[in-house]
Length: 118
Picture 1: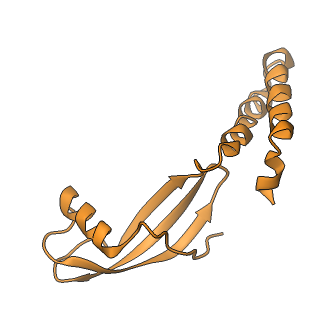
Picture 2: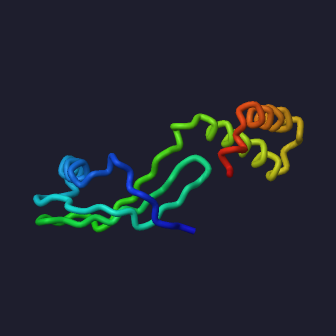
């Protein structure tokens, strides 16, 4: 499910205008408005659909922006759980994946990663 979320401070119309001009995505004119149309948070990132308005020129009506949760390294520790889970799901022998799962879970406990999951 996607829901609108607040706009990051670094996503100003001026910055988007510069970026679109530099990439060839906007020929003349400038961005006058940007809003988050929808947003979805995953385990490791947030994906946003941005709605843009222009004064003069013609550019894309929407942009997709993805950014990682790098501000908290514990997300990467949580992500480490997925590899042994996948290995188990494809029926690899537990000798292959068990020790990795055990280490990942100990890391999650040690870093209190469960707090990130609400």
